Length: 416
Image (cartoon, rainbow, N blue to C red; front, side, top):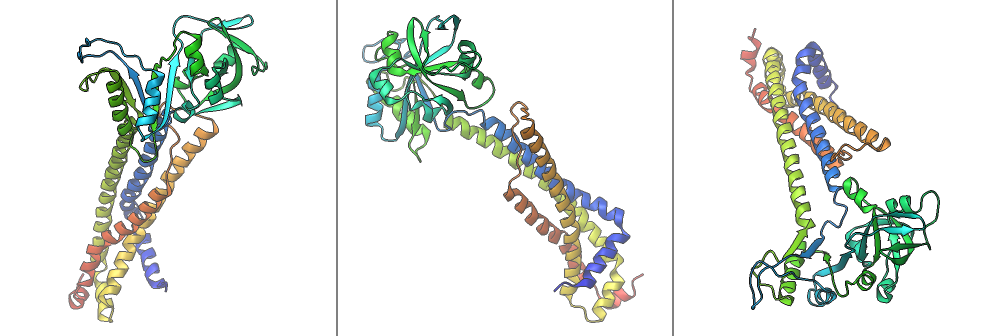
């Protein structure tokens, strides 16, 4: 049941001391406001940086280098060449591997030609599994498939920059033939890279052809430049990274302690490092904001102590007329909760509004701010902040309320 008298008293108290109440409540307002803004901005930075990971977040890349340790009569400095047999061995012997995508890149100086147009582009020999490692949007036609690999078809999938240069205007590239280093390939698909920044610019200049076709056509039979791997669900990427490198070392007679023979990049580890950084940023935001909120609580507590002092005689009258200690405590705590709750709620709305406004303009005008992405405030933060407001309000009024409940009616009535 709503006690109208208590709410009237709270209203009159706040009305009599508007400036004092406003200045006290500002600390709570600012703490909640900073919490929402800092966490929203931190999420925007996280979204911006994680969007740079335009590949599977648990992918592992492995390539060969030169050995640094003599082993089994073989000298150091030996270059290792991965092969199709290595790919088959990984699929057969390492159960934790979900995807193996061997890849080759066409080396040397060459041009890609279509009629009278010519330019230099990156040409990669790929398998269909590559789409599980590096997602992209196939806009027309199709991507390389298993039949292309088996029959070593001369087909190509081209990126946006290739279309601009070789097929300007509205010319439809599907079915046309382009010349790559003297060999003709039929265009069977076009794609758009996923991501942003420098990577998307470079990816737009790529032409994909079947990996087996590149091996046969350009004198790279049974050669693999590097591999991209993705573990099965629930398997850490580091597990397949270690097992695959150990298997390759055994197959190519490399010393187990030779850490330089095979290079690798663990995207999952890098992604976890980034996530740890943002967890630290969020923790720092909470620390700063809670510190500010605590300062506001102390201010509210001090104000409530002053209120109790000012109303000592009134409290004495109440107790003399039979008011219970709980009724006195609940009055003071309720007033404290109202001050902190209203101040914090306004801070919550203001902070959320600013983040929502920034998000709206960034989406509407497609604004890119370097590594800063779309800021967000999730529902969990709003609920947590609301619970925090109620708790801090009760905490701020607890000591003054306890003091008020202990007032001796006789002494209070003689108070001046």
